[in-house]
Image 1 (cartoon, rainbow over the protein chains, first blue to last red):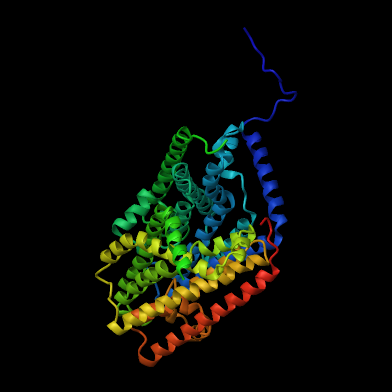
Image 2 (image 1 turned 90 degrees about the vertical axis):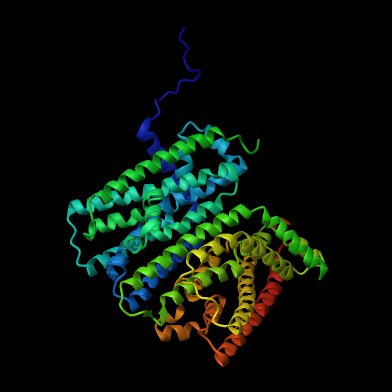
Length: 279
Length: 267
């Protein structure tokens, strides 16, 4: 027996990529409308982030007032590293940060039930719903610092180098996202995971330090267990010709894939153990 | 006085709920600290002379360790957000009706939360100090240690009164988070969180010394390390006490004006 759906839609809805692009377009529009509702706040937040970026650069400036090098890194190489890290961090903030922080709130208020019922991939919805436009503006300031540092270093990257650099930035971004998502999923059990999520924000600080400064257990943990030292260092080292071996790239790509798969497995497992908070 | 003691015990009980949160926070907080220490170790290794900016390696490591201890004992973490939320949601109305002083009430809660935080952080921090024991220096002398404790108490009060005043901005603006973060950013660098302030160019340092920021962190650490002596030390403590008094008066004044401006939304 053949049964047809009760209400066949008159026009076939877009499927796959086009459909998700459309949904994301709606997120962007909502985000923009929300930000423009609080314009002064929007500008103040950009200022706060600029201030923090300035502080990071000031820290390095103070260190280089008293020393020539950190391991083998010179001042402008480190400035380029700090700039690149800020770029990755701001794009992460723009796309994912608020969403990851909000997951615990969604669990507590029962909003998650509503999101899970949507006919869209739930992880897509949870990860990308809130877009932070101010962070895009701040990503611009990061690029400005990077360009300035690159000129001081007399860098003339080739096109393939630039393409590789950009790709590796995306890979690094996915490491931050996957780790943060895993931590956010812990909120299924602890309810208040903000502490944990903000804790990871602390670890972001590691990514802007030259990996050569670290050795032993510390370096091993933050290279292999939580590959945070690779996130910014590998792309930057590619551009300033500091890579000790091409395996560093292999490690970054391999580990980011592994962490992403792990986050997906953990997410599915968490949802299976989820038993609604309200309603 | 008795009722405020109850507030402290209540505060302890309600913050104990978040002990795991505190523990995780303390643990995560140790990682960037360790990173900074390792970074300085790498810098010292790459050089021939034993001092950078007037600090030997052990002094530098101890600087960061004591910074961490002072922050654990005195930093305002949630209080300012809660105060702002109380005002925004109109919850503050009930305090206006009760024979309780809101500033004192919040000060008791602050003390309670620092107690619980310290209890949660003490094990990881002690373990960390042990781990870094090769470079960790004790207090310069008994006198310096006593002065450090006194200065620590003043730092806590200064931290609290300034955060309290900042949070009171919620009487006038809807969203105080940005202001709190801007203040925090200034405090972070001008308080000596990231590096000892005397590594800055002298002109900037003398400018910073005119602000309360160095007295919110840098000063007690300098006292502990024994980098201040005799009349300089006494003078510093006096200035710190003046900042505490000034911030207290400011908090009272702003509170008085805020209450007059307050319209009990949702209360």
